[in-house]
Length: 297
Image 1: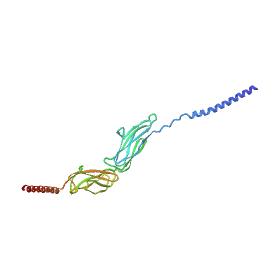
Image 2 (image 1 turned 180 degrees about the vertical axis):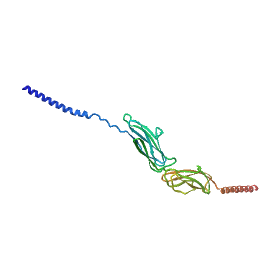
Image 3 (image 1 turned 120 degrees about the vertical axis):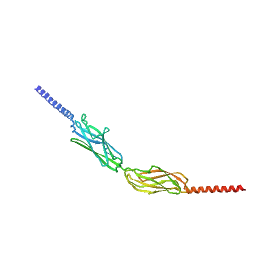
Image 4 (image 1 turned 90 degrees about the vertical axis):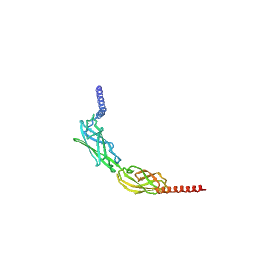
């Protein structure tokens, strides 16, 4: 009887111990099963165009440059055909490793990493032109069979204010006669990309001189346009000594300014030369008469 009870107790303890160990082992099994890595799904073959700086601004007349990455995820080699759609008045260029291209081979992937090529894209205004301020969009396309990808690149043109003063010959010297008007022609040119409004002409001149402009204010000067200005120098008679004088002509508005130094060689009037000679003759004659009178005494 005692032996039977003892066997039943040992059997009960064994069952409880077995159930307890099974309970402890279950979370470990689940945890081990959950930790099994799941393979990442394979990427479908595709091409892609990306650019870190697809839009930026610069002055009118410059060339805009972009670096575009062409990537391909596929296990074979394809040829990507490259085309552009550019705004009127602009010339696009595609280069790879310094050579102009219209297509490029790419692929296959390297150990699951897509193949990538860096393209250099330039957008230049037609020679000798300065585009108006604004945004100009260039579209780059890459195609190969079923693959078709595009990217928009934007050139933001800023207003360019630029102005110059010159003469027809480049000579910045002239002659004038005291007491008379002397005319000097200069050319004012808007070399920027936007019209210039209210250009005022002023002058730094010797004291007592009169310098006038015709006209003194230019209401508007369009981009690329030029106008001829008549400058009149009037050195005062009787106060101006013959010699070289420097006159500075300035033209400016709120956006631009330009200066021009002109050397003016002044000659005295011929009538004053005659008068001077006559005075000298009279003085000499008077001295001669005086000496004759003194000699007789």
